[in-house]
Image (cartoon, rainbow, N blue to C red):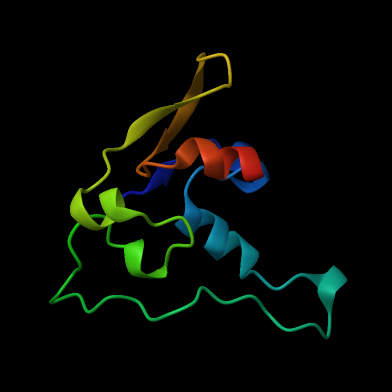
Length: 102
């Protein structure tokens, strides 16, 4: 399942999905040599028993009840003024908060 689409520079600069943010944060960086690597907490779900709602919800720092009950649609990501950001979509109920944290 696709959780986010975006032009590559936009995705790296400001991800709009917590899973994307987690993946990017786990990339080793030369300027952090010798420091502990970030890891997404928990274990990936058993593919035979995907949890209800968003499959990332057991590991997501933003997960709330809606995430455990409904699969989020892949929505158009917009700027703060509501203008659509070309090529940007996110399957997260809290993409606005995630984007703002970036």
